[in-house]
Each structure stands twice: as structure tokens, then as C-alpha cells.
Amino acid sequence: PKEEELQEATKVIDSVMNEVKSNQEIMGMSGEDVEQLDSIITEKSSERYDSRRSGNVLGTSFSYKESKIDSMLENGVPEKEIYIAMGMKEDAGAFQQKFFSQLLKFHKERGLGAIYQTFIDSIPITLFFLLPIFGLLLKLFFYKKGRYAHHLVFSFYFFSFLFTVLSIDLIINRFIDIPDFLDWLLALSTFFYFFIGVKRYYGQGWILSYIKSSAVSLFFSFAVLIAAIGLGVFAFMYY
Image (cartoon, rainbow, N blue to C red; front, side, top):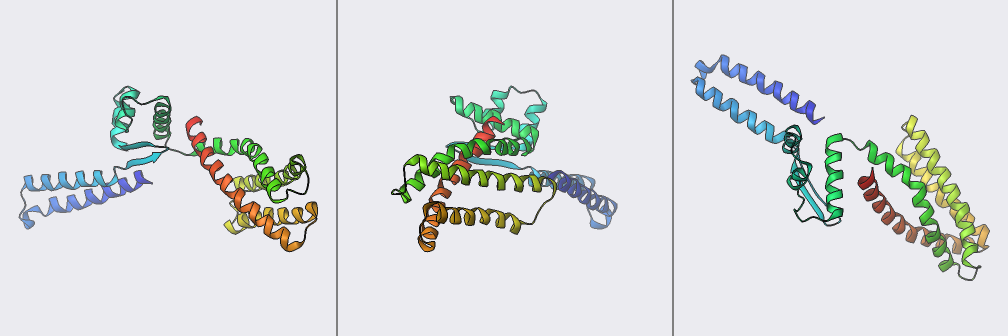
């Protein structure tokens, strides 16, 4: 999109400059004035569309102009020098060097496809690690309802349903872009499944089951958020 915008802007500038050149005598401009005006407009236009990337990830800061990095790549500059131009310190450790290596790779490919695919592929493994955390939360809220293994059994059945719903949603969205409200309905269905499951599995009243289900879901959402951030970093570092 930025390349298309730059092309459109260039066409407009060329059209304007052609009009200026055609009427420079009427406007009282010399050839040198026209060239200077053309140079200024072109320079300002390039600066407008020369994107700067900057940010901070886990304490690692980066900041660079895309055009500068592109120029360094075209001229065959060593990658370590490019990393430094992107913001890496000369005494950077292994993690930072890996980070800037991936950042340069991302800059070259100009896309999120590979990162997204790595993120999606890692979800089943992430759910596997989240399962015992979910079981621990159930143990805390239903501590009189059996041993930890008892709660893990329920967690396994619920996560099986969760994984099935997530898989169906991803498969459908791969072929058909379903409306957002349907995605939210699918997500909401997992809570109602959990709520009814808690009511039947632990045999408590509807109100108490709803309160505990909501509390477990709330605390578990924080664990999911942390896991999602960690998964995003992992996907970027190892895609």
C-alpha cells in the first residue's frame, strides 16, 4: 500500500511540475527556480513516505529508516553493521543479536505470514502447558471436591472441547471470513460449556457454579494473556 501511495504521489508531483514548467514564464520563474522547487518537493515527498520503524521488546529497543536498511542490503553491507544501524548495541548479548537477526529477516520478507503460521502451530503446545494451570485453579476453587488429578480430568475434557472449537473456527476462517460476532459467539460458547460442566461435575448450585466459573475464567484469562505474549515473542524469534 505504501508503494502504491508513493507512486500516486509521484504522478501528482510530476503533473504539477509539468504545469509549472509550461507556465514558468507567466509565473516569472527561471529554470533554476523550477529545478530547485522540483528538488524540494521530491525530497519532502520521499521523507513523507520513508517509514521509520521503532519500538521496544523485552527491554530491547530498535529504531531505523526502511530506506536506509534497504540501501545497506543492496550494497551488501555485513549483517552485523545493519543490526547496529537498526539500533543494536555493539556489545549486545546472544538474545539481542538473535532479536535483530529476526528483525532483519522480517524486514526482508515484508510480511507476517510466517510469524502467524508459527503462532498458530504453537497453540496446541501452549494449551498443553496451560492445562495443569487450569487444573490448579479448579483445585483452589473446589478444594473439597477431590484430589488434583480429579480436577485434571475435568480440565482435559474441557480443553478437548476448547481445542475443537478453536480448530473449527480457524478452519472456517481459512476458507470463509466469517463475521466477528460469530467468532465471539463461538468464544462465548466455551464459557457456557464450562459453566454447565462445572454444575454437573461438581454438583453445586447454579448461582455458586456461575460465580466460581466466572472467577476461574477471569484468573485463567490472565494466564492466557501472559501465554499469548510469550507465544508471540517465541513466534517472532523462531519463525
